[in-house]
Length: 115
Image (cartoon, rainbow, N blue to C red; front, top):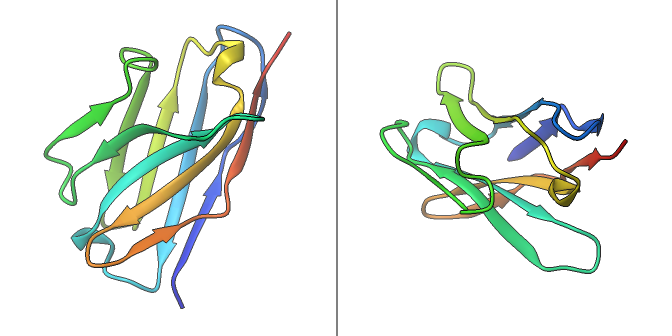
């Protein structure tokens, strides 16, 4: 059974940091590109960052470039999103997604940036 389980979300003050994790199981993790998306209240789902299957290349939305870092550990079947200098507009539910022959989504984790 395929599972993507996000964790690490929570409430953080502006300027703070969080690290999200997404643990995968049930498929060959190292064959899949991994992405983080987010969806703020009343808005569509937005691509935040992507990493290739072996971690050789990453891409970021302009809104998070220089503040967020995506990484992965194929031995642990886990992808991470290190978020720094957080802003209130980063508040959203964050989802991880696996893409190759199929696409799989996690259930999401809430990130709230507020003082």
